[in-house]
Image (tube, rainbow, N blue to C red; front, side, top):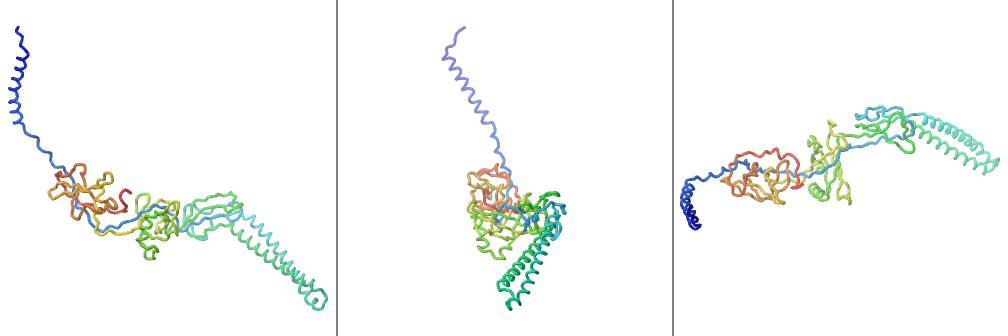
Length: 394
């Protein structure tokens, strides 16, 4: 069999390629190009514009408007606890009964001392009355008379001391009946029947809080305090103090009753750099109890005609905020903006947007600069603005 030289084989291959190339070009020309993808479907809305109140927020803790500690003021054993824990008590209500035997014995003793002192005073007074005419007739010496006068004065002082001791013993006996000094909500008892109390120092028995109105103590940083003080004036007038505050509870609900500022401390704590304030809120249903977490909102300013957008419509990359704005032909313009305070679920835009702008509120991940989209027009929920306002990133 004849052998084909390699150069003849290469020529044959090139000939096959030349024959196949026109066929490939014919097939390529007859194939249809794939259609372009349809515009991305998004939801768009016109930005909101309205006056926005700006609030300052601070975290605090609730407390009674008065907090009263009930102490055992005499030594003795608790005989009976006369109240139900966690209930409302009234002023003068009997809370505890202590064993009265020791105070009764002490009172009996001081009464005996008083009787003895009064008898001694009577004797010395009689001596003075008897010696007085005799000293005028030189029947007794003046020195003896003056001694009797001094003894009578000492006896009178002893009577006064004994009467004071009697009053003290009567008061101590009264302390064996522990009554409530105020109306309020009583807490748990710290002692039970049979407990020895009052030995060496007053013993805490329980606490009573007046919770209508309820108070909230909170702190502000120096920066926030200056902003707050400038909004209200460095020396708040009664009218300024009456401006309503809001209280947000641990479950996110807002207390239905507005509050007012009642106290600003005299100085900033140099260790923490904060200042203490206290607000008062009506609490007629007594739902809020002392010791609860609370967030206080204070209005500091109003931004007139502010532009608001949903927070989900704002993209943030390395501190740069942007919003996707739709042009008239539904193409996307990714525009940098300056974000201000958050107000509920919305964000105040200080610059970069103008009234009437349409923005992408859903489908941000589908858009890019200059892309054409299919927009479904929706409305921004103004109810999403309900809530507090805070600076971006807080």
